[in-house]
Image 1 (spheres, one colour):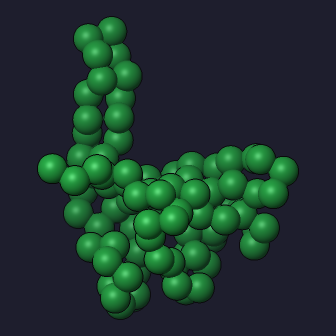
Image 2 (image 1 turned 90 degrees about the vertical axis):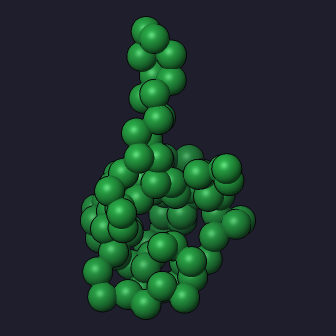
Length: 86
């Protein structure tokens, strides 16, 4: 099984996709994509539970130059998937 976490170095994100991510997370253009995944890791007293997100939804992380990070779930609309986001 492949690693469900995509690092920014592994993924391609068009300017349109980045714009949608920034808009949905409510951040400015200084924020850059650092990671994305379709599986949420939930840490419980029983261990780590992996929760798959619905098709087309991604948990994404962005960071600004000062190290401030923002995370959220996004669903892309009206974008061609030539970048392999699935």
